[in-house]
Length: 581
Image 1: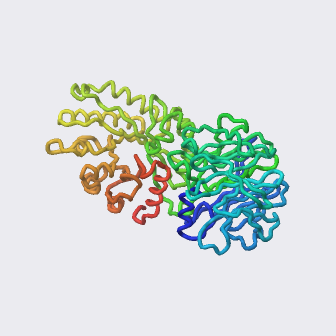
Image 2: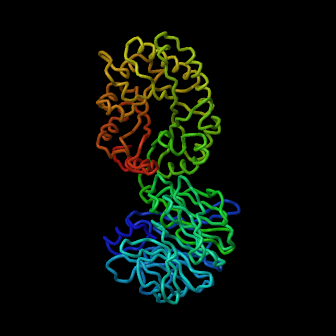
Image 3: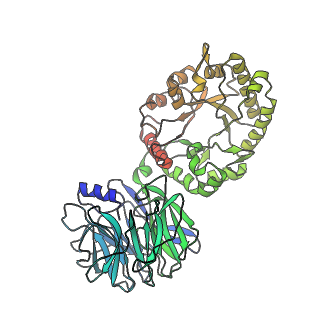
């Protein structure tokens, strides 16, 4: 069922099915999750949008919607999609349910030939036929049929303010009964197989959570208490023991929305309540698991994950990403352990081919030993181009010229990077230096680190911010360091965004110091290419001429809190830019 905002948008633009994507091309993956082995597999891939699988009570079929119509497919994926005849009702959305005896299919759909979208609930024989409308009013979004086959449960928009609540009514027709009246959206009502409860999701506490109530609406009880997720569409297993639901990160979506093409989790709780278990993370959302998709034996459930077609078909290019961009997702050892598999997999899907970590600390990377970290990155299908870390000189060290303690720190750091097989080690920042004496010490310091790196078979580099381009007499910190360090010992990684922010042309520096910038940080205010501040085309036109060997995308912030979406858009911008070779 759609959020109020999306419903209004649909009404404005005419009659469309309530499906996940309206204009975005996707590839859909119909997947099965085994709750005993905790493994999942793709049983069928489709070069178009399908949504919301049901599992038939006999275990033979999965039912999905596509393009306003309903289809079935063998539960093992061995058949093609087989259309179920729904007569004149051909604007079905992703809210469809099979009766417990397998004889009936209930659907939500717009009225035929309607000029505006207003979903109603219908019922028809599972093998097909002309549907009979059940709900007298719309919008009504189906989510459940009682186990005895007598009632349907649905979310309805009613009243002058389009209040969104859970309703039930007899399948044979009659008066609809409102079961919830809390402020905000109540959605996704689904009967337990014993008929005693209705599970639903509600935003009444400020965040979308899973709730349960008696079938008559009494004893409405909150069942999830997720603090950083919005929990939608609880599906109770046939044995009544477990509930699977989809959870959206709260930084990606408003509590009352369930949109497509987002990074979501499938979670599970015991039916009597308890801590949620994250089963899998995926790219999906609307359409993934809108309706109950448990197998009859309660051992498996079906869902749909997605890939954007443009993400799969854009030209492939050698392109890195600075993992500091993802600090909110993998920026601590705990977060890395929790999220790295999904995050790294998404980076590969976006088209990134290598990474530049910034997580070295005390001989480890993201809490892992050097070899463990390398294996994790490589197992995801990524290489490590370089690594950011730093040990700036203190004021006292700059004044005295004694940086022996700092070099000892670098020796341990270099040993860890060598063990990890990282061939470029980059000093990510240094404190501002505003006098030539300090600059002289800093240049000597960089040369000394570079010499130690060379002995270990590692290239040493320095990464600039805008402070290095501030005037210090007749020079700048960056100009002085480039001029007074040995090219055999020190290379530079030009951050084009910070260079522009300092009022300097990146191309000018690339030409002035050709051969010194082995790497470049491709960066913008938010997503790459959106601000108009950075001239990326001339930068890439001068790329090879300036001796640049690789570029790394870095995003400190996205235009929304969804950094993965920002990195995806940045990757697509660069992959589709003809001047990026």
